[in-house]
Image (cartoon, rainbow, N blue to C red; front, top):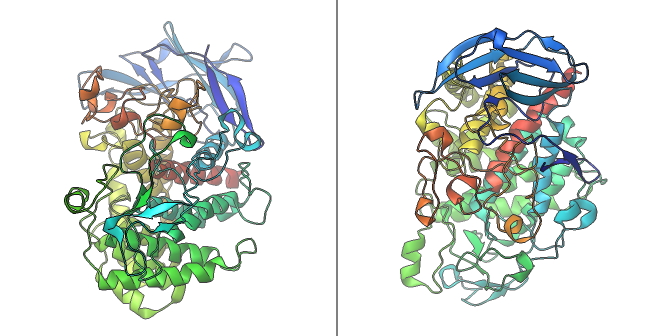
Length: 578
């Protein structure tokens, strides 16, 4: 029997869970479903409703008679699966769904997503650099301080008149970006921006979400406190001489799988880029607005406003400075081989930055700049494509503006196209029905970010189709999928134990950090040349629970931001109904 780790607001507690067979035959949300939501299970093969039984574990009696929705054929293979509906089950309790010799436990309860919501947000505390991670907040995952980043070097690619190569600067705090120990402006800005967008939609919920971090108990929501820890690092990444923003803080090479305190490579800030500077301007303006009048951080809004305006001005003077690592390495040493986060198109970053600065300042020139770069179609947000973050702001903060009226049908048309695929899908989900839905970080992008887009559509229209579809994507992530895993570490009856994450691999603790969303099935299988063998090339099954599988099993702050946004918003809606 293995351990599943459930997060409480006081500490990390432990609960024993059922071990599932290697190839589960029954796929269902393993974390919990709310009484009022649609409830679906997927059984491998073709079965009749009479061959499926749903049992109340307390009484041993049949709880409800299920019905067969349909038999679905996988779009990627000849596999056939039976979709079972048991939405009539509304009584809270613990249950087992049985089919032949196969069984899977599940729970129905109010607040079913609460602990996942807390765990996803709490994971950012566990990913902090520059401070000890204490046992009273982290339980067994406590560790000494790593990477204080008070002695960071200016890389030769990043020089300015006031900061020649080799200048020592201090750039503390922030989150480790992913499975590695570096800090990247582009991805940090996107991650904060997305979570702040979610916060704006359900601020009352997040104000009461206590995840037990050092700042808990002050007057600020824990989510905002956690964002501030990374925002304060981001402010150190702006060159005070000209307002430009360094692309990343990094070691020349990825560290080996050792603990943060044992890392010895020098750390550098490297070249400025237009993308990083605009992302910085956007998130600083957004945060300046949301922290206005905050008693815990009284000076932040003024400082962040100045930083955002200076960054925007630098971008206007340098509109096409691309971060091209290979080209940089031909000229400057030491060569850098860590994550690139390169982006050769910044119309979307301009749109987001101009939008946030307009909302902060009401200056018409920023409104004009946003109009000039208004997207022609909606696209789900990612670190490389942030226009949706601007769209969400226009739709919710300025719904009567002409631009909002133009953007609204784009979002709804995109969401309608997703909802239309559900009746013929293999897992009763709007995502995961095309091969292109799977790839690097797909669980964050194709599933969580799409789910959040559906929630924006629900908020704009009140149409329950969008809410149902968003819940269905959450069900997929939490167990109703081709692999039969809950893809969030520490939750469900079968979750990843070996993510590509250096601390989890090096800390000597069997379970990984809880609350981390792994990247998910990736038919590109870019890591298979490293001695890894995938059991199949099917798009939705190209996943390995192996620490060496960076292509399918890495974790990253942007994917977790997408998880926080979807799960937190869904939980807030259920909480409001009670």
